[in-house]
Image 1 (spheres, one colour):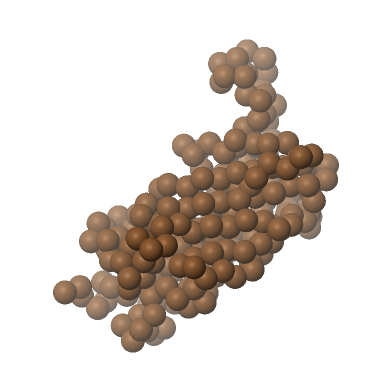
Image 2 (tube, helix red, strand yellow):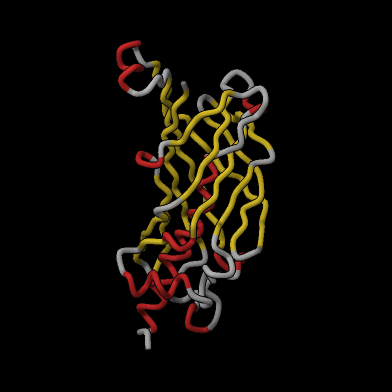
Length: 212
């Protein structure tokens, strides 16, 4: 039997991760007008944090697919889509991760993925954007706003481009948002009391993408 306090911590971790799924939103389907960028999974990350009593607990999802179309001149043409594998949840504790995949939390077998797909992208400041669209977890979807920061764009010189297989540009993005785990039915019940595990899950996503 799992220790109640350990279970609460598991929930916190798992939920944050799920929340995190939210963040994988930096990916998107290429639009007809916006340039398609290829997300580099080796230099991208989806992570989360949620309070266990007063201590932030962190975790990550190791497997995800991100599609990104980015038009700096006309951000409205941009799009983001993300698909995150629940089974890839990683909190640094195998027993806890197994519990988080169970029916008590994410029901990974029945709902293997968390997804986000933007309906719109709006520029709200210098290098600052907001992607809006549905986040789906455990078959429940909620419209969310995902603030995104363009960290930078680098043009590669010809010699370096050849070394990297013809890549001409590299761009980095950061997305941050906060979700309420209860709205998605993750970790409900007396043992997951709000007195132990925080309602809010902070999600942070970093995406490095390239274009040929």
